[in-house]
Image (cartoon, rainbow, N blue to C red; front, side, top):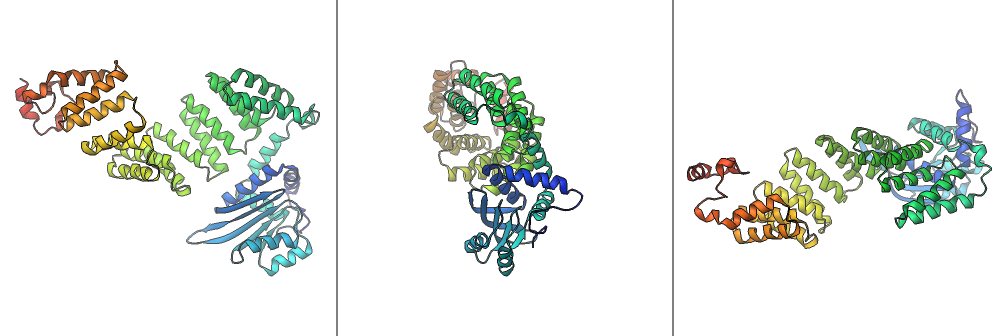
Length: 448
């Protein structure tokens, strides 16, 4: 199977546009071409097991999903130059039993066609390549990306020196990495004087302004970076992150959606979208995002922990606890998951296990007064007053202004529990938990 006549020509009403796209693809840097190949593979629902890229060639081995059927083993190859028999032979050698697909906008030699037909390799040349790009809605973003990339092309031709441009960018990145932000800004601005549409320079300038806390400037730079290379999902992710810091959550989510439309398997974009939805109280949608991450990366502890937090908000405590435990099985030192597990155990009344979980947290984080306070509450619930008092005291050493710890410590010190009250004996003040207490009526009588 091959589209076109094998010599790279494109026919039909949209032939002129298609030819322009193919010409621009031929002028791409190798890394840009490899990125386009990976993007197309993602949209074809290929689960990549191995990928090799060199020069103008990319070879991918993996599985392709099929609706209602088992996935099929696949070897997918891309080449910008004319394909020869040895090129097709390489993909057959990767897996003789796999479906072979070879894509090249420059077409196939006669010998290559003969070889491909003999081994039932599906071949796509110029017309076929364009057809695939259109089938998976990649042509619009590709045309826009190429249009932006070649803005001010005539001016770029007269750059004093590409080495000078990259030299400024290296200096800017080096200074940014050591928090020397003023110098970094000076060098990145010099780079932009040479190439005003340089997306990487605008992206770095955005991060520098963000480091200064100049969020309006950071946002404008992030927008420019995405504008000059709208087909790069990383730039949309970066723009979403700036909007997140500014509290513009709905716009932030739109950026993550744009990144995901360019790369359906973009784990960080799915993760960030889930966190943003969580912050809006849209917990069910957040869980769906975390599930997409876990489909792509089953051992992603961050999303297991985040999913647990969202499930807890949905009132699904048992499921939430399972998520925390899965995360901790993968990473026993994951402090956030231990904290969430401890708080959840305390919430459901399992204070003995909560104390153990808080102890795990305190092995890593010994200077957090709120953790000491929360552990003290669990000791208090277990009527382990000596341990509770020690925890409250430790919390106050770390933060003397922590009102809840100060109140709890004063009550413990007063010995009020010894007077017969199962709690602090302030039923009428409606201490937290009084309504659920089994002896609340008795306590109410004693407090009269």
